[in-house]
Image 1: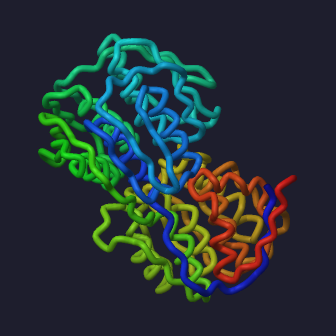
Image 2: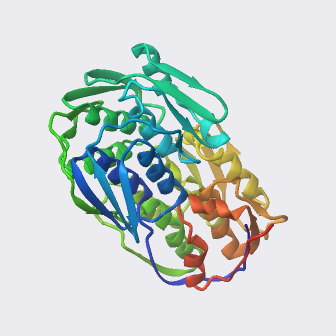
Length: 402
């Protein structure tokens, strides 16, 4: 899909999309709990559809009715067919340890880019436990039977590995302990996992700065509502940095989402050229880079993990901003974005097959105008993104056939 966006000033009210991060976690927690749960307020992005498909492949009854997903959990999890993770890193990393509960072989498939992303934490765990773990360009195959106990894992690669192991150990029953080594990345996402599990009655808590205790009591079915998503809301509030007047509704002020920091970061970008860490909010990177380029610039630290997202997001944004006359400085763990005048792009923006890059390019285009190629990648997290943008008075023309 090719999309052309014309320069304009956004005005209006838009509801924050449901949190993809919380939807993943609620659906899995519901699958682990006894009985039939209802998860309300689900948006069927490609990533959430992948998690639903994988839960069904593990034998969980999942029924979608409108924006409510009914999950009948408490069943033994066993892969009856390959798990199709599409392009969802969360799905792959949450599901892989659940496939290590039955002692039977399981195959997880995904896009080539997804399978290029690190799985070292699980690969090393399987090696220590004597489990089978093989991977190629299109799939990962595992076989083993995980048991409760004490585990030591690297906390410095991705919080998704920690969350995935927490889910699996909850399913094992009894009490387990996870000790994390290295600098713990994206701690707030682990907090979201613990919060979701506690809502379903599972004991799960931090026992220290780098130690987790999980399990010890069964969970129970419940009804829950997915809160609004700060990471996807950020692009709409970023329109205010470019002169817009947009109000985003549906966000919890007491949310544990790390991306809630965007409002503070936007204030800092408006005031000058700040130094901002992306350690706990890597998904904000592309939109922050675009906003900084439109304002007075900024320096962003803790950026190394952007290389292992849906695209190499630092390099991708450097390529797209260069089309507008802005040259980023890319270092191993730091990115400098100069401020100044944004020029109309000298050629179409590329999505790099990354939903966050599409949103950032759209933000730029509301000032400069421009075409975004392969813009359908935005469906990974927000299928109705361009409709929401249009509702705010931005002219958008979509060409479904490229």
